[in-house]
Image 1 (cartoon, rainbow, N blue to C red):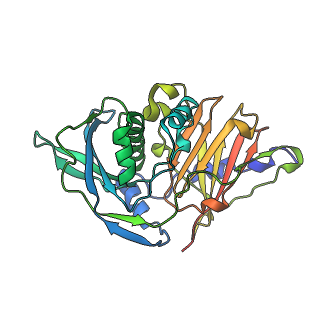
Image 2: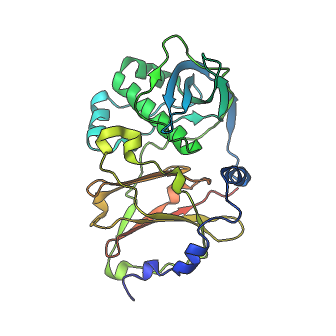
Image 3: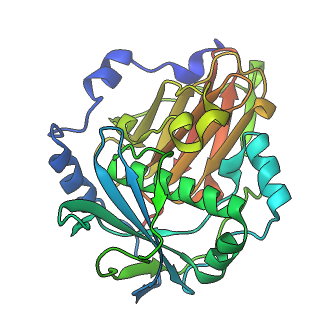
Length: 319
């Protein structure tokens, strides 16, 4: 069996199905995402309390407002110290620290000049907000994560620098209701995720798939974390759904990571609807959201060091 049999996929089929049928405009994509069936989870509807209002701008100069609001219904992130957070940032692994949050729907609110601007409510845990108010490093980190999350969800490309925290306003407009799912916080992977594939360990993969185009959702590391990631690059990748038609059973992520010699050189974090892949030595970083609920505990991965390819097998939660 040849070493490259893992990725023996007809490229013409992949290219032909690069876009889901009928997706030509952003509005079409939004309508499609609304139609994806997600499993019902226990949930509660809340209206958060105001906390802080952040004014920022997109790369094209559009003004946006981020209402960071508070609720006890969202769990706090893992308890770590400023020293631990600083080490994560210095080690270029800040994505391993997760902040649970709920990002509300985009709406237009009038600013002080009576001009409409996109506005978003981002709900976080009340006690964690208090911690951010007492420790500047956590506050700055929180804002960077909020900007990243809103940018990913709405493809806004909000600048991570130059934002202003409004002094005399805790929120712009009336805060909206949020539906909060009741689930445990997954602060870390419970077991090593990546398996190195070499020689006899390689297995062929034959897929009846359709490619989901998610490239617009990917942010460069520099746009999220600033100069610490200025040399980061987004690798080539594909997210495939299986089977091609009918109910989606799993997603398969294929990431080209040349020059990665071992799984120790990669950091992979798969959330319910988020995929993060980092290769520190080679400067690769991909951070994307997918329109499905992933069964995180059943995710597995394989690194083909010969062909420079990371493959993630991600079962989808079924109703």
